[in-house]
Image (cartoon, rainbow, N blue to C red; front, side):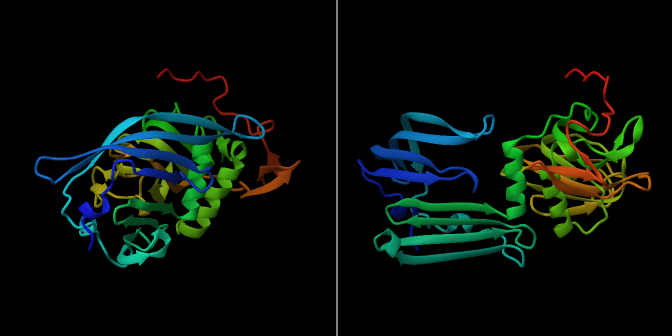
Length: 349
């Protein structure tokens, strides 16, 4: 097995060009760097590299028609280091959980792709029983990390990309439960008006269709409403308009963010990252622990006191646009149901 010392053995003047992609809908970006300095710690256990770099990355700007790419360039000098040089390269993965839903494998081989150099590959799948997350690392002798891929299940990727492309609106009227980007799709309590479809259904019909498709494949409870949270800081609360069990699952590139029940049989913290949890959120106080990164969650549930006669959701094409249908009525931004908050002023932050 290779040691860190064998893998991260670079020379002054070595140049590296790295292509990286944020998600499958993004254009590739380039990192270019060159070793301009190198030294060891006094005990020879750590190595330090001084790099000059000249990078760029692109983002898709959807504010114009057609969309265009925005470029950001950066250059400068940076320092990196690798410690525990005599540790084996597979040692960071020795404590990974392996069971029926979590797999891990290691391979050591000479790669023709990298000029016959000895390489180490580590492959990992987390929560593979449901919408798993796969990781692949390849490290070469004297080459460092030559390949890394982090891939999510396609349903989460589609929904996550749509939310990155067009983030949810901040919900200023959910200040009791928390603060941030959170919106409901499907049936909602419309304050002084009867329960009916949320305006999000016809404002963002593509996203609503994705959520319904996901629910059809993976949600095994009855539901007529879906709440989508995007980096939403949820304090202790009950979902007082829900009835019966709810289905919750979280996704995104984040750490922390466990779901916490403050009492009852489920009291404590639960990891819901790609791990669905079905519970009665209407009768038990719950919250979300602090996290770092981008955290998304989906909650499928049944709205209490739903009247009979509301037609199921459907979709159609109108003049080349994907639209939401309530029974025979095609709803758009121009002719949507009356807004229950019309005339209300937004609460001050």
